[in-house]
Structure formats: C-alpha cells, structure tokens
Length: 529
Image (cartoon, rainbow, N blue to C red):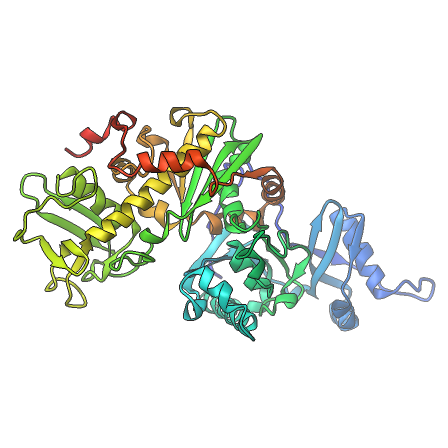
C-alpha cells in the first residue's frame, strides 16, 4: 500500500471534509412484516450513520444492489458525497472489497497537464505526474486553438485529445502506485477559460469575439461519466469556475492555495504564463487584472526560450570584473534553450554588468567574443555553439531584448495600475505570492533588478509553485476550501486594462531598466554588486 505524503489541514486553517467520504453500513434485512425496498433500506442506513437529511441513490447503483447486499450479509462499504445535509451515493461494495478513498487533481495547462493522486481519508498526496498537453499539435497558443475549434470537427478534436490525455495520465499515475483507476472516486480540475471550455466540449468562439463572454462560467453537478473519464463512473468532478474570458479556474484554485480569504492585510498574487494574471486583495475584497506579459518568458516569443525542463538554462550569473558568464541547466544537461527564470537572470545580470544599458541596448563593441551580428542586428552569445545541445549558439538579440523590455514593463505596470486603482502602494503589501513555474524558479532579486517586480523586502515574496494543482488538492480534502472557491468567485472584481490611459502612461515609464523613476528601485544598485 502506497504511503501518502500527509498534508496538515489544521495548520492551513482548513477542516477535513473530503469531497467523497465512506462508511460501513449495516442495512436492516427485509422481512414479511416490512416491505421497504432495498434501496430505501440502504438510504436509511446512510442517513442514520452519516447524519444526512436526504440521500440520492443513482439508478446504476440500484441495478446491482440486490447482489451486493445478499453477498455481504447486508453489511456494506459505501462511498458518498455529502454537502449541507444532502448526500449522494457513489459506490457500494461488500466490506471485504472496500478500499481507501482516492481522488485525482488535474491542472490543465495550455502546455502541460499536471496530475496529483491523493488519499482522501488520510489527507495526503500519494504521487504526482505530468505530461504535455496534446492540443499543442493544433496550436501552441490558446488563441490558435480557439480558432481551430471553429473549424468543422475542430472542437470535437480538441476535446477528445484532452479527455484521452487526462485518462492516460490518470492510468499512468495509478499504475505507478498499483491502484485501479475505478477506485478514484472524486476529481477536481482547473484550467484557463479556453481550456475549461474545451474540456467541457463548449465552443470557445465567444471568448475571442466581442463582447468576449464565456458560454459557461460555473460548471456544476458533473460526474466522471459525463466527461468520459475512466475513473469511477459516478465520481463527482469539481471543475473550478471561470471569472469571464480572462480569469480561469486555475487562478481561482491558486487563490485558495494562497489563502486570500484568511488575510487581514492586502496581498498580491501573480501567475505568469500565457498572460500575467494578478490579484490584489484580502478577506473582504479582491480585484483582478490580466495582461500580455508572459509569452516572452515561456518560449512564445524569444527563439531561445523554452518551457522549464531538461536542458533548460534556469540560472545565470556574470562575473562583474571579467564579464565571464556562468549558467546552470535543469538536469545538468547541455543547454537546449533558456526558461523564464533563466531569462530573467540573464536579463538582470547583463544590466548589472553594464553589458546592456538602461534602454536595453547592447554596449559590447563590435568584435567582442560575446557579440555577433545577425539579420536582426547585434546579439549577445549566451552559449557558444560548441557547448549547446544542438550545436548552434544560443543568442539573445537586440529585438528579443526589446520584447523582454516590453514584457517586464507590462508586468510592473499591471501591478502598479491595480494598486493605484484602490489607492495603495507597494510598501503596503503584506505578502507577494508568485505562482506557477515562474514563481517556483524565479529569483525575486533578479526580477526586481530589471524592474519587473516591485522593490519590496525580499522576505515578502512567497513562491507558491503549482498553485492551481495545490488548490485542487485542498478542494478535494476540505469543504472550507470548496466554500472559498465560490466566495472568491463571487467577490473577485475584474479591472479592464485595455482602455486604461493611466496604464499606457505608466507602461511607457516602465520601459527602462529598472524604470524611468530610479527612486522606485533603491536596492538595485546593491544587488550582487
């Protein structure tokens, strides 16, 4: 039996009330004086044992109920969902065939699918896995996929490959831990709004055309059989609600991880992926905004950019006196490219070493060993061809530096604008949560050095890792976490930036390193100098 890595819910201020629970029930056998049906007898036993007011028993369970009760001498193991005194039976087995309760969490990223197999009764994570999202074949970005879904059979294609990938991921992680997929009795999933639509087989066309509205924001009352998932057919599937076209359920799950509903002081959370999504708030109010600040960091714009993985440069340092560059790759393999954290490191180190100036322009003279001329103008040699996995040098061109300048300016401006909207300043932020792969590997000092993140005490920055997956795990374990989802969804107010003139003015000022107003970044002069 696989041992789960225990999660201390008390420490997180959450109760243990899983999405699915189990009880051993002793059912009164029928007799000539009492003609109550078998299903009603089972329902009554669960009501008394679990303290429920009402219980529903699906027809599919009733069909096999006679055999289960008679072969178990009317003592059975029952799995059920219970919320607010209302219950629904999910599985009924002889006690001898009972097992632990397993749940599955799936973060549906546009690039990567992340899975966690959990023990619901003894709260803990049994194992995690990941795989590429196969929809990449039909479009690397979600806009391309949304357009593909408009083509004949396009929507079905994207939905089917996603369902298949989720089933394959579930099968793989279960096989690793010698668990039958049919023993998974609950699931929780989250993705951005487009991914959620494709998961549900809903057309995302309304998301990319005015007035940019979803077909459905809050999926409810779904079971595994409704989505073709190869787990227990009646397993409840909790899909995180979207907040319009720009805020997906993955962000809502991330806010549960951060615990925004429990903070007295204002906090910030940023998740950088396809877009930069930002939330500001505390237990009484939440404001969100989104903008295009992410693609340059995850491989969508810079040619050498790549998703964090084996061979990706994830850390860069430059010797100040000699200009010698040192890098570290994931897995210690020859470099294939550079991921977001490495790109920010590189950007900051080049500035701090005076290799690029405050405008982002290369200062190296022609003929310098680290400078080459390309069709796009001068470029910096990050890795010579003889060291690179593909034999070709890894370069950072002037054009790509300009893209990075725009991305970092957009990130900082989104943060600044959302704070100004409620008349707060960065020094009033109690905690700054950085989510996703971006948050897991980024060195906040480097992001501050280029003016991407605000110059606040480093200890206020908190890395959340995969906040969406972690939030889904908590949602499987706790009714309080599930209540937080709806509370966050109702209270979150979206701030539109596209038509915000103040945003555009601030963006222009942020397009210098670290900023036009150097006084906003007093610590930059002392960072690893």
